[in-house]
Amino acid sequence: MSQSHVGVPAQPEVPESRRSDERGPGAPATAPPRERASRLYALDALRVVAALSVLLFHFTGVDAATKANWGANPKDLFPWLFPVASYGSYGVQLFFIISGFVICMSAWDRTPGQFVQARFLRLFPAYWFSVVVAFLVWRGLPDGARKAPSISDSLTDLTMFQVPLSARHLVGAYWTLWVELTFYLVFLVVLWKGLNYIRVSVFCWLWLLASILVQQDDVPLLGIFAQPLNTALFVSGIAMYLMYRFGPDLKLWGLLGASWLVMQSDLVQHADHLRHDKGMDRDPYIALALVTVFYLLVLGVALHRLDRIGWKWLATAGALVYPLYLLHEELGWAIIRTLYGHVGAWATLGITAVLLLVLSWLVHRCVEKPSQRWLRTTLEKESRGRAAADRG
Image 1: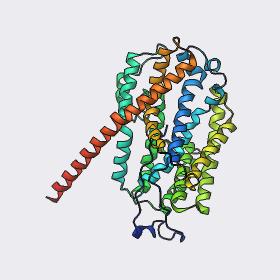
Image 2: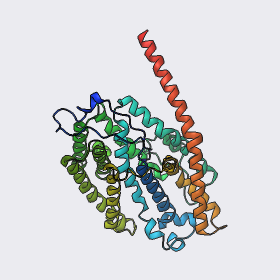
Image 3: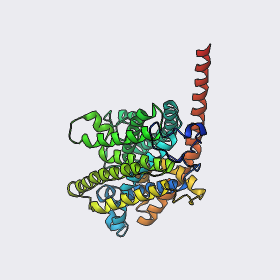
Image 4: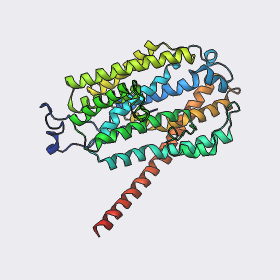
């Protein structure tokens, strides 16, 4: 989902003493990094679009899955919306492009330890809450057509490592969080030495190449950390952040073009597979056109074409995206199963969406922010205590 499912943090200013060598030794002389806005509202807007598209896909764009909850095929309930919503799953690809951009931005001038702590604080408090909610929904509002995940699987979900531990997701959308985690683990390789233009761009080329070569060789571990489609999307986001920070050059255009070519190959193959083997009637080249539009929109941010977008309410909307993504699926289905039959399909869809947005706001204000504040304060206090003990 990714979600990135993360908000765009304020980017710390780079000291003047570091700006001249930030591109790394041997890099071509260029202008120093541009001044950066504290928040990119255009990225918040794109994240909202991605989240709502995934929500519509799950609720109105999958005939087999949604029929079990609506009691009718959504093609019949939402005849004009279904063909559009069926492409909503590609909001995940938009999340991954944004994640590459945002994670690179938020990691710049941070140590690996600071990066890991920031990601932990951003991801886990809301995630743990959503696991508890999903568990209660499965047990208290059961879906008679499906068996609830086991207690062991539910506990394993708290780790966010249910994929390598072969546990079942409490919420189907959780699969994207494992993809995000693998991206963070891979990115730590380049972050370990500190980020500059050369290190990050070389890292992107090597990671993209590894994702291509893994298709020819049976290397299970490499396959986990270098899936071609996801790697290409993350690399694209990183390349666009480098354009945003340093300005575009031929090498970055080449990296972006190469990542798009790898992306389109895997995307079309995957869409063909879903079309012929899974019965999802989506045109692969419409899907490719849609994801290409996502590229162009994020590129607009990178090239400062969307800097004029500065509506403050987008920051609040962007903050709701991660809780909404985590909560919408199983909880949303439970609401739909409860409401539909009492009110019409469109009213059910609207009420469900509003309830989920309100709950997401409450989670952000009452769960995310207080827990992040407490965890950050506690971790900093413990860190100072250890430092004092070491000095003593």
